[in-house]
Amino acid sequence: MTRAFIDLHCHTSASFDSLADPAKVVRAAASRGLTHLIVTDHDRIDGALAARAAAPAGMTVIVGEEIKTAEGDLIAAFLERAVPPGMSAAETVASVREQGGLVGIPHPFDRMRGSVGSEARMSALAPLVDWIEVHNARLIGSGNEQAAVFARERGMAGVAASDAHSVLEVGVAYTALDGDPSTPAGLLAALATAEIVPGRATYFVRLWTPIAKAVNRIRGNGRVLPGAPA
Image 1 (cartoon, one colour):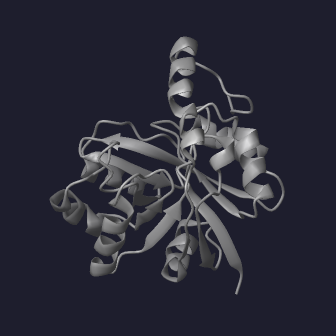
Image 2 (cartoon, one colour):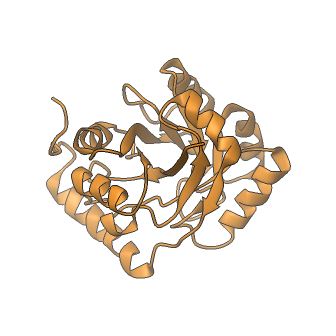
């Protein structure tokens, strides 16, 4: 059985809070032993497309998106087009499904970010999604432990992800799987074998996030990424 190593949540400079060049992100992922990477920029997919175009041999980049819904953030994977923010969580999931994509819940119970958060919302969403992050490398506090308990009690697939916003963070946490997660069906099947490989982003690295926000505000939102298809 093939062993795969996947980071299911990673940002590039397409995100408002990252300066990580897509090509450098995928090279870092490959150099650290990852076989698969889901690039999930905030509310857009051009960074993921650029990363996929720059991927070295042996590295599979899956086009994803971190989508801001009315109830909190969701992760989408295997997209052909961006899903607009601002819809309800259920509408967002339906939009992803129309493209044949998969959906996960990132950094649940994280009070510092746009997380789904409450137990009631999580319970309502649980039947609609494919996995939950039970270890997010950037999460501060007890949110990861809460997520792990939530997933275990409901028999949900739990994953680890870096939530990288810089090249240094790529792959600091990831998920090991048996099988080939290169397709929606393959990833769904492989999630049953998920092994959490935890790690933490350092506080020093996290300091780059406010810097990235400031730089991107100066640059504006209409930037074109290297390698992004026209």
